[in-house]
Length: 112
Image 1 (tube, rainbow, N blue to C red):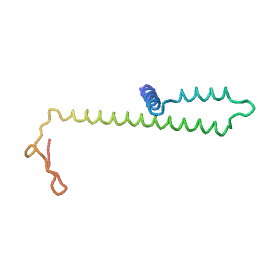
Image 2: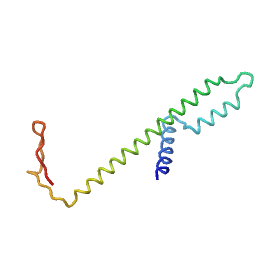
Image 3: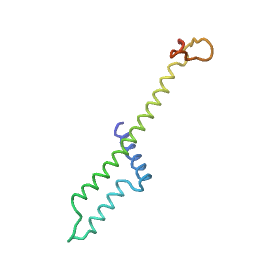
Image 4: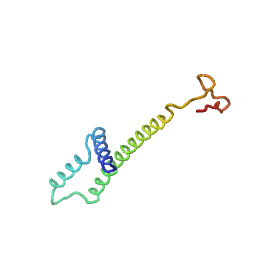
């Protein structure tokens, strides 16, 4: 199940990256390979610059993956909160009135 979630999150992150930047890692790699194939053999691109470009796209991709994973965690937490509220169904609640007021930093007791 974790593998499925990771795959989904990665594709969602890739789509988000493409939407915001206009390209994702696949587009970048195609462009990078084309650049390598068409460079001047007598004056090739500096290896340091190549590594720098690859590192930058990797960092950007990892940021999008982290963001996508955090969105998934937030969604799961919201679902968990909803499910925990279900446990109150059928419980009896005792409260004085239909509203609870916060006075001097302390709320009145509510029992269930």
